[in-house]
Length: 494
Image (cartoon, rainbow, N blue to C red; front, side, top):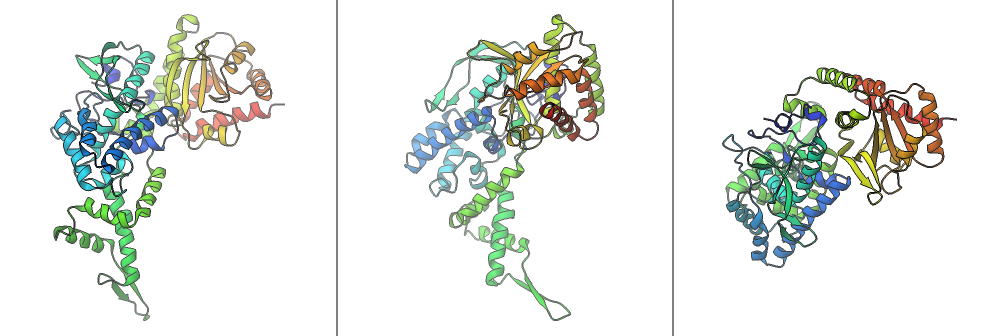
């Protein structure tokens, strides 16, 4: 059963901010520390700091030859079954990652490799590339243990959004970056049939198929070695002469790869990862290039990828169902919570992965004010990226107010939303409402707010939501183009 089925959420994966795992089956995705390190939203930055704090401690101990202390840091590296992520050998979620016995083996492999002392490994994700017997399962498991408190807090927030009950219990150990030690605390935790579950943001999981030894070895090390052997005309280099008398020297990459394999077989290197370590020691810039190149390739999975993987209904059927749901929500204060929850799930499908980590009823200004929904802006392109980079509107957070009114929203609602803005948090918001009879008048009011330097507000009603949902059946850029048109009307309104 999926999380959405267990708790009768009646939503699809694309309407959820977390991975909608099936608790009794493997889910072949992994928490990806490299992906986390590339993200700029506040939650990911904080999580990345915790990961780096732990690994920095490991690095310090190993470089100071305090190996027993480094081993001690791994004493709480258990096999985390709470996320249900990864692939097990048996087909049940028993895992093949970091077990209690495995943890000691992992740190011993790291110490044995000397990858840290030589400076080859500087980040926790690098050990997948250079340390033997460590794969993406184990990397994901280690990361889960380290960031468990962040996942607990995230789970609490998601359960608050969806009305899921929690139970106060002692947590499993997690790394505290400030005390630089493992801690346990009393927490409100999610349990199902006596089993703890941790919800994981879908924006931080991947297949870990790009940042690994295979990709680094083939595309960077073998390629570089091939180029060097061509330059010095090694014995592996071949010459091909054409009928016109001209010729060319060439060397297939597979011949270089076979040479490396033979060197390993002859005992010149302990393993392929040992070869990569030693090669990188003499050419550290090669791994720097690899790491930088992956920052452009390693991205959060798209909604389309999640839908394909989870066996969701077609986007056309989902859109049709969402439109029916919107029209069925009665207007009025009695149904304000239902409307707010619906809008949150709609924002997920319309704006992920540009916006994520929605928080309901977020307190601001020392708790004196609340915002219906706040989302983190992590856009690397498109409408939400242009807001900051071109329009120079601060928008690290996006503020959303939901008004389930029968009448048009007006200045009081605009003033309420703009009153939530600040330079540090953001000065862009979306005012969601059921119907706008006079859009030009409302745009003019939003324009007045913008011209008075009180921030930019885009109002959207049911018809706008339906148009954007319908556009998902075709060109997905149409959603952002639609927002761009409204933004232009408000900014240029005279």
